[in-house]
Length: 218
Image 1 (spheres, one colour):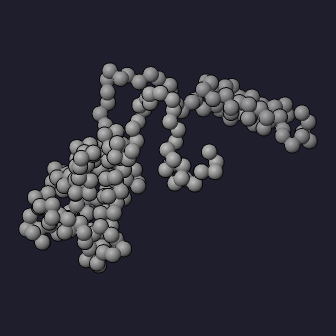
Image 2: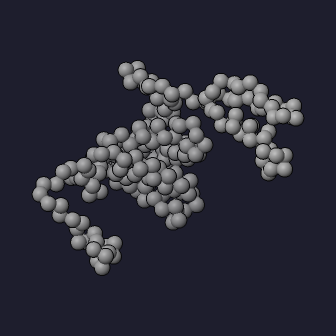
Image 3: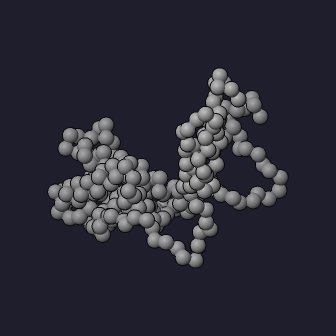
């Protein structure tokens, strides 16, 4: 390779050596007529190993919600997603614990949610005492719904309820996300899971094909 080539020998050798990941540091290699040594090879950043499932580790972060905050979160989650004839209540599938785990994670976006959720739970307790002189989880469903109705729509919330409404919107999003990620709630979505169907495959239901506008395709 001549010096007039777009890529000099020095650069070619540097690329070859730099690509040798995981190899111990190589001796300096210099092209003829050059005194600049080749850059050192860095050891691989990752070390492969088999996980030891007989020694489970604790969850990597401490859960931050207090018992009082968790009680308010549980009551509100069950108000949003109550038990019915086909589905469990939010608390029965661990939604409050999911929210607690979520807002306790040490990531920037989770830290934002932490401020919104913990601040909102405090706002909810204050509002409950203001209206009914009781904690939110001690109220009747009708009393809880009265407060929730004032904060369930951020675009319609009054100025005094906007903090509560911003909290409610994010809490409801986390609540629904945690709820429908649990297998016990899939039935209410119409998802039956990995269940074998006896006999010939019945095909996609006609109402689904019509909803997707694929009548002329199938």
